[in-house]
View 1 (cartoon, protein in one colour):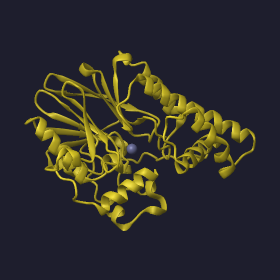
View 2: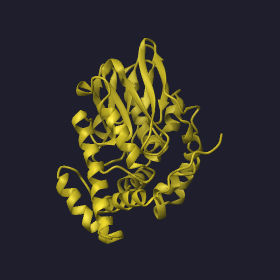
View 3: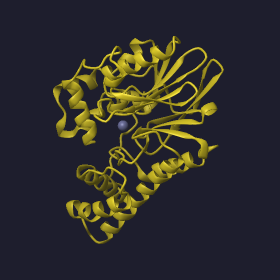
View 4: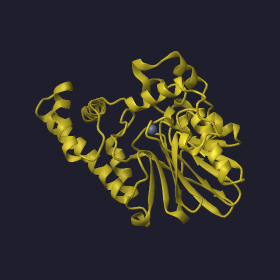
Length: 316
Ligand SMILES: [Zn+2]
């Protein structure tokens, strides 16, 4: 979460720095081809994009996955798409409501895209995003959240988008917010997971259920041809089946360690002090900040105690 906030604050102060005309070296993301006409846009080392995104080029148009944390980063993505293909940008699918994945939606809409999201996103987008920032919310961020465009098409079921003859499957998944979608490109064996998968970085559990999340993680591992599959996570570099298994192991380790600490009657800082070094030792190649570890332990503790608060679906 700290990274998200830092990235958001950085982007606000650097607003306008990135543009579609920026040379590749200045893009806030790294574009990686992960299949024929399928690209992952991986957040750069300075985290100016705030998260990963991507896109699929079909016969007659382009489907974009997520829009980064602000319109500057999203405009840079639109520029890269236009550089690669003259085909129109027809859709952007938001994997969930968090600002680091929806903050650039207006730039995609301006480029001609219909915004697609889980049905819960419409109710949460302009309300629950404020919670992500806690006491670090600023009037600027508040205003940006209040002005986010609402999705045009919403779903609580799986469906297929045909880009001409190219099939793209949008699936509803549980675990991260209660309103998440994944995007699968069967002919390229590419799954855009949104924040259902993080590679070597602790996931943001603020809205999550680790119990549900682990079940979805199992589904990813058992999807057809998973050994050949490429997974584009919400944060971290392009991933393989091995990374999906590693992520599942991390969640299991977190739950097991917090459970053990709770059984030893540890609370708050003492619980974090018990879990953090063990978690880091088990995952030495992960980047786990002290702040992230404290948040992971707090949210896992709440889930085990049955006091975890998750976003509640609103009526239409
Ligand atoms: Zn994210």
